[in-house]
Length: 122
Length: 107
Image (cartoon, rainbow over all chains, first blue to last red; front, side):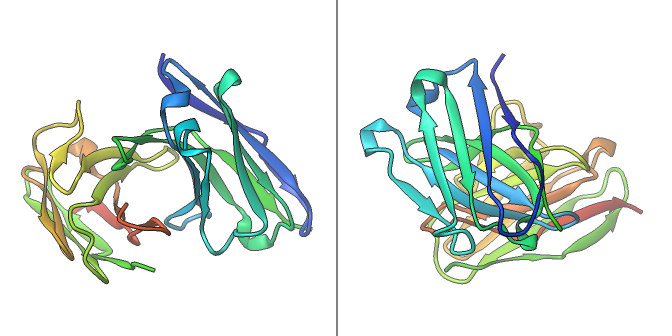
């Protein structure tokens, strides 16, 4: 089955760190750009960042709101995507979705995980 | 950064109605626009990409149009399963951004 499954969410104090994981299956993970998107409770969607594939030297892009605090990485041998989050703020509280870029260059996000909830609170 | 403004933010409609949602970009984005549907507690689902290309498996009652700065998503005959929130997204440049969403509710 083609799917993305996120894990690693939970409750963390402000200033803390957390690593989210996304396990891909059913497709050739290494062929795709991958992105993280988040959604604060009751709010809209916010793009977090992207990691390109090996042919693009695994370069990354980030939203200004997370630049310098979040890092995206991937392990193609494990078909896994990661989001390393540091210096967390209460406004980072959200459901975090792992998504697959479709098309070349990616024109859309054609596969989404179910999301994992991160709560930043003291 | 490119801003996307969706309108309306909320609409109430009946089964069988024709529904149109608009998305306006703060600067030209060619056809680098996608539309997603999200139901409560679920992940978004891709409907339309490249402004007007229907994603595989999406019912033909959904259609998209536009280029440059003005785009529309149309549902030709609203079905019960279409009551959801709809988002546009541009993929023209970084940062990628989403519109604020349009919630479609039952009248």
